[in-house]
Image (cartoon, rainbow, N blue to C red; front, side, top):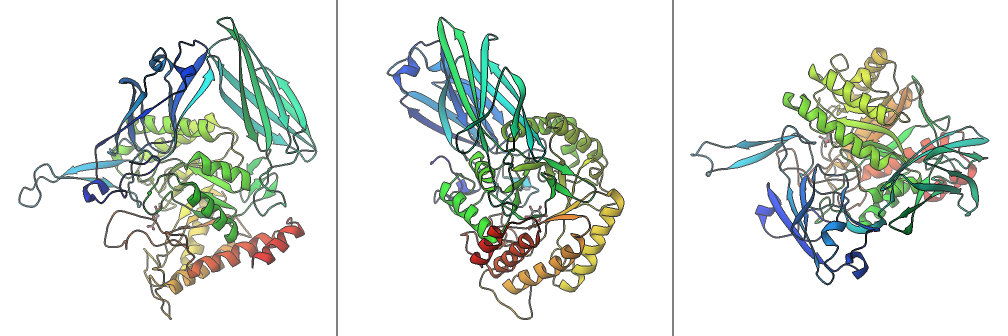
Length: 572
Ligand code: GCB
């Protein structure tokens, strides 16, 4: 089985496609001899970018870690297991279980079909309440790396700025000794040192900073400085040195009752929702696919996306930082529908997942907001305490970013909405509601926005809207599932967005960037077809409508310099 990849679509075996339960991976690797000698000063780490969902890992038959949940990295120090055995290959064994229960994230449930007249013995199905295929496997790269035994374990950076001066606050945690020294230097993109510091916490002052700007908001988006953190320590008679270089984008984020401000300027999210999903590889990380998607985002004039409905690969997030694509970073809290999933056990796990996500992505300038869930049953009374707790925990871990969750509940019944900073609402007027009736959109969408705003006086993002279209299916007048219907639906929504974005609507994210695989069902034709691109990343007619709109919105923004306008013209 290749790594990284989902195992489901790789073979011709249909039982593997829908397999639920334990799978085993094993690989022998030859390690550098230096790592295997008894060396108290070298720490060897085995790291998984992600694996779905519950993993137990052994090295040479010794259990070194277990981890619950996909989409996020986990690692273990394996030095003591491998050292002292030069010449012997290192055997890495992984047992992976993709079963979802009411207490996992996302939640699910196993249903045994006990009617012996209808199902074979021990027949069961995995029920899920989310709309994407439950791909499993080792989805992201697995690496072995070393550090000295005293090492930089974590760095946290936050930034504040005015036009002429910025402050970069840092905190560094070192593990392995209390006797160490730390020195820091911040370099600009020309390699010039612009500030220096020392010690585990402090502040660096940057005069005339180059701010990190979103794509299409500045001629040089995604500007990042390099923060070099150097640690030195004496251990076991040797001088140990660990150096880590962190890209740092200087930018601020603020939310008012009607606006989302990046570096003090109003930011309008014109973007997409995505999935990690493609033919054959499923949710497996794939560089060509990722780079293609970024080229499509830039072609589209999209300045943002939401990581619906789980954290994406770190490599994707690196590109967002570099290209200035703004991210609403969502945890795998999708399909939280059963009342059992609002209990203490689920809540504790949700808090841990937020800790893991924030630890991974806290220093990313592209991440401007955390989303703790998608379309939970937030009308259930326990959702109030649940989301109050998850959001408070998220804010305590990271006071620098707003927090939201994405709702499709009725504005008057939603128990979680009081705790969010931005209202993110999904609606499918003329699709799931009043199917085929495009004419209801203006009234229903206007009412939706007005109800939410009247209740909360918080800015609103239309975090999903869309319609399925089967590429190549045409119909005039537009009928559902045709490319024309998808386009017409977009236009109806857009006319309302254009009115409301003058007031408090701060963004629109189409559902979805590309077609994606789902469970089989009577409403799914080889998956969900709400993509504006096909699963193979070819544009449907709707992609051109959106492209024209996004570039127009970007150009209307008065702060855009001429260079971007000409870029836009050139692209058209
Ligand atoms: C939604 C969900 C998304 C689905 C989409 C749809 O509200 O958040 O995961 O894929 O609707 O197409 O039904």
